Image 1: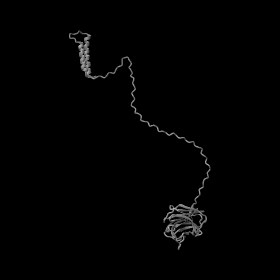
Image 2 (image 1 turned 90 degrees about the vertical axis):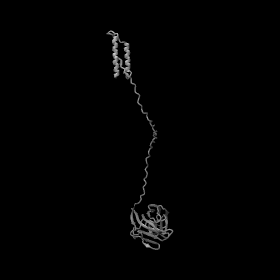
Image 3 (image 1 turned 60 degrees about the vertical axis):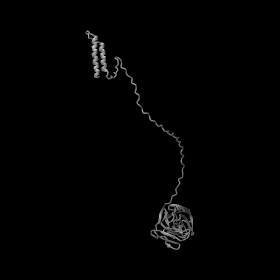
Amino acid sequence: MSVRFRKITFVVSILLVLSLTGCLGGAKATPAAVDSAAITQAAETIIAGLTQNAPTAAPATPVAAAGLPEATATLEPLPPTSTTAPTDTPLPTDTPLPTDTPIPTDTPTPTDTATPVATATPAYRLAFFDDFAKGYSGWYKQDSEEVHFHFPQGGYAIENRVVQDAVWSVRWDVEMMYHNVRVEVRGSRVKGSIDGYYGVVCRFADGSNYYLFGVGSDGWYGIGKQKGGVLNFLVEGVDTSAVYTGNFPNLVRADCIDDTLTLYVNGIKVAEVQDKDFSGGAVGLAVGTRKNPYYEALFDDFSIYVPE
């Protein structure tokens, strides 16, 4: 409570005492009796002056009437707090319906199938090898009007001066009669006509009867048969993808197996033919000419293989 309010209360109390004293009696009124109405008016004036600037009192909390139960206020529920608006929920994508699973059919019982038997490729062993590093070692060495056999540049060279024929050199100091055999040599042109050729021979009986396998400096290849002194090619052709041309070396291989004669050049099979005129003989080298009378070839790494 403020000081000003206390003063107002004190003055009002005094005025009320004075008023009551005059009204209730107990003493005779004096001639100078105070007019109660005037006193009341004066008190109101003083109170008004004192309370003009008094602060407004907060409203008093109502007190429950005596003897009555205190009313219980019904509390209304507070409004809910603001709820965040739900974000857009993505619609579920279409899930493909499962396709009908085919009902398995009865698996047929496999019938007995004959297992094909692979034809076994015969295994070979090296029976003879010569790199011509030692020069003469059982090969022909001769110089005449028709041929020249010599050992230049660490190899073996054969020069053919005959027209449309082949000259040969075979090994007589090794097993002579080969039936199934593989013969291989590396050869190259030295000089002469581009249509000449070089290669190997197998089943050599004599100079008039043998098989010849050759390649030319122009990509030519062929399997020939010299029979009765007449040379004919059983199969021939041109393949510059397998046969290296010019003076580039070629690896020439002949497989003489039973009645089958096969020619490989640089590991590629280029020709095969069937013939049974000759059943066995020696093996060796050959150089031939076709249209022109001169051709020379150089050989290296001569090999003879026989089946195991």
